[in-house]
Length: 145
Image 1 (cartoon, rainbow, N blue to C red):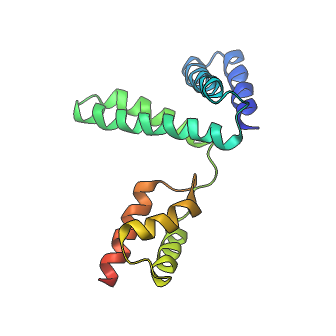
Image 2: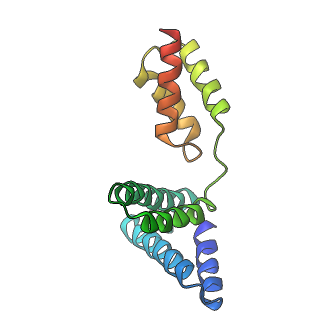
């Protein structure tokens, strides 16, 4: 299970005295434990992935804020953390795969953004960013329109 992998990697990072990695993994394990308390059951891998995705989203928002504030060194640190966290995510879907699903949804009768997103997003849950899917849907709808 993914949660056990995070705990194992945390132990390894502690033994290696890798302070930045220990801090990041410690935070992730803590976030997962908090989520487990909220849900009142052991987490599934999908629920742990949800915790990871939330952490990645927060860090991406931080990168934007740091860049706007001229804090390149802090933005770089956040990007490094994102890269570590993304290693635990399943392989991401390619733009071509997303585009094919979008075209199939449009061909299947979905004619507006909401309808296409409603059909495509569930197919790529956890394997593609909603913003990426949205951009491809808009491109394909504009090309048809």
